Length: 301
View 1 (tube, rainbow, N blue to C red):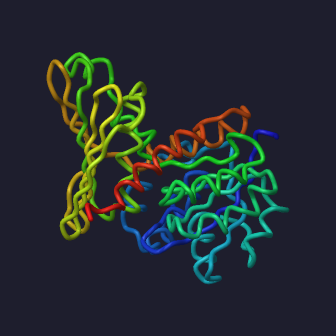
View 2: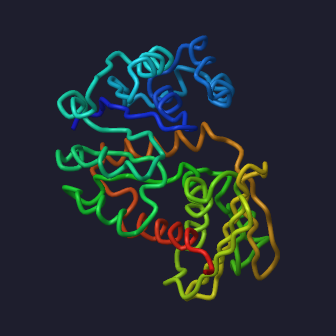
């Protein structure tokens, strides 16, 4: 495949502006029209970047489909997308790879199926699925390992990594606490991904405990190597997305603060995986994330 990759974007699901932001990261954007996208945070962080330098130049979103032609037209005009299709399967003949920019996991299988069967690289928005069985069903459609790319962009957020200076403060990790607002089903993934990156030698899950109270949910997970993590979602309560890392020498809290950089790094990884024909996120890692999400859906009943 050449290095100028044409992308088709599929969107939009309620409360999720990724078709606007992801497309702008490749194409640039119309400032005035993006102001009316309905997600004020998007123009706020786009306006802080230097375009066209901020674009990922090896890819371009050339086609879009959404369930509403007027919505498709607005996204296309805001994010400089040249072509609108009325049937998402038309993308198979018109682009090299797919951005499935919807976070309604219950619909991912049906949307992804034709592209996976066609052998096209596809980035599926988080979470891939809400159960391991559904995730395995989607992954089984891959024509080759690495065809499917799916994660939270927080996986690639540099501020949620533990740089050498901070490692000296923490020592060996004993426990991690993670906090994020909104729903368990859609947003727990944002802190699960960077947590697991911090403890690569964790081993199998040995135990877990889930608690819910109103909008709030809390899951404790224990691993074979003795490390435990606790993921807390806070529903409509506003809390900063953060990780508290407790270690043998001390503890430290790190906060998520750069949405644009996280999205760009993630999309960059997807494109580089296509160009280099390598596996960016192995299927077993995707499955482990979904397993933890599924554990969190279960109550103590």
